Image 1 (tube, one colour):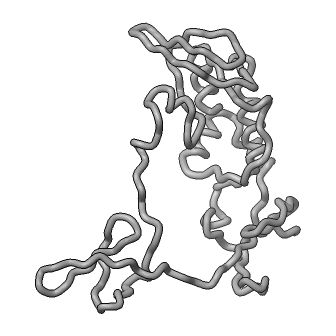
Image 2 (spheres, rainbow, N blue to C red; image 1 turned 60 degrees about the vertical axis):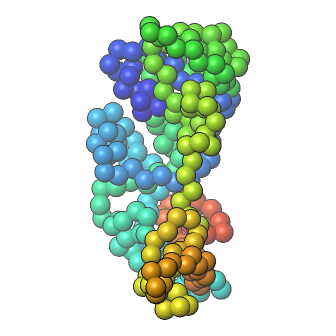
Length: 233
């Protein structure tokens, strides 16, 4: 919707297609920081975001029994220092503010999706699941991970996926044969051996004691979950 706002502002006719029947509710709290603060300021919505902030006040860590082992009111693991100008808002509020900023110049098609894209030198013919087809100058696939729009253009996503590995070692930890592990592809680690040979080993996964995090909010209680808990003021 941010892209839709700016395209409309610079004179384009904008259509936003959304599979949900309306503005989709729910989701995690999101941070507005860095360049996003300047974008929100230029859109004239920064003050509205400040009114809807979650009023994050700190965080604490608890062990697997629920006993608190650490607390801070200065910073959080994901949000940084609390005295910065960064904001945290619930996803519902973020979407509501951006939707309101778009104004009447942006057309929304809810409960629909793109089913076909055919491009020529002058534009793109677009077919929809539940609406009449249309012709557009540009199509922006902003439908996230496993994008259906991207799949229509490039085909199945599998050829573009790369396995990044699923195990890790403690920093500086040596293998059972005493050799310092080198970075390898996937869960295996290749370590140098005497005689110019190399052997691939499967290291033991890095196990650590589970730690859960509580995020301390002001007036809002964001609910209790398996990892993050919101505490009343």
